[in-house]
View 1 (cartoon, protein in one colour):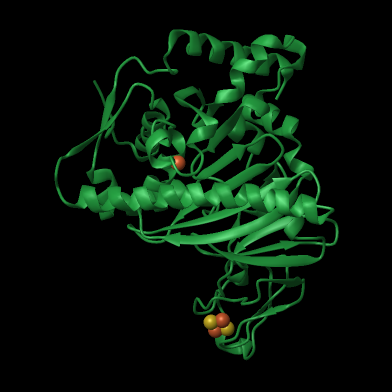
View 2: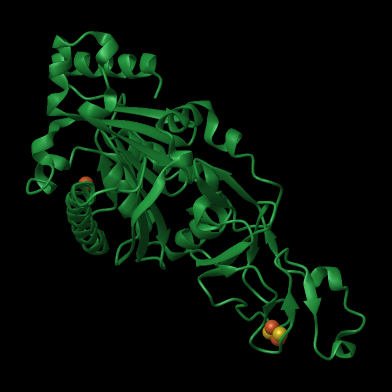
Length: 383
Ligand code: FES
Ligand SMILES: [Fe+2]
């Protein structure tokens, strides 16, 4: 992050501490519990938001030139990179009768042969061969190529829209602020560490909600990370549909004794970015934790997590250091999952029709407003 921005944010932080308040919305807001329970709403979120918007599916480094990977997140995906480095994305589905085409998680590019009737495809998605081709005469072969999806690479990650359409413009999608911040963190060249794949029985939005406010830290994370953080104090900023929060650590007051030229925002709090529609990036002092949140059905979440390091740990000591950091992070995440599950149980009980978002939880309101806007609905209630 540019130093001038760090100074500006830290000045705002010190001023909030002096006033004893967090960044705040003008008023509290409310959200109907039905947004978490309504199956039709869930289907719209999946089809009209998650399958349309660019979502992170891999690190760029996971597909070297001449290789492919498969993923199964919102649909079976096949991603290939040709010898010149060009990345392509496809639905991993044979056009004959709809069989999932490739099983391997990764490998060198090859002709992909369907296990059902042996139609074959080139890594560029072109249909290559049909055994007994005379049986399909009269069908336009161009509609039998693999269904291609818009793909792009930014911040060292691969982003895919699960709906065919025009090429992704990720610079425009993320906007100037997010691009400038992430470029400054050096994410493009960072290395992948400690990938996770977690399945938990809660609505996907409840998982995202737990990241978007720090009001809960004092109580819900008493056993893990509460001691590090200033109670219920943060900065919250909307960057289009993306969000940048700063969760302040108790150590921040020490900067009052430092010249501004030495101020370093990552030393005294965690930056939490929500990248619309389902990615959470926690920027810590010397590493970055990324979580992508996918629904596993209306009442289930799959979270793919990984850590980004400037370089792979080059000693046992470095390895233990980052393992210890992640042990604490994932312990806190389990506390969040446990809370989210309690919310899921609670809202199904029908105790009330509305949930409340306090003035210092504005990012919750923004996330749900962005979903509303994408779906052409208005469920968030501004008081
Ligand atoms: S479904 Fe793939 S060849 Fe028949
Ligand atoms: Fe939490």
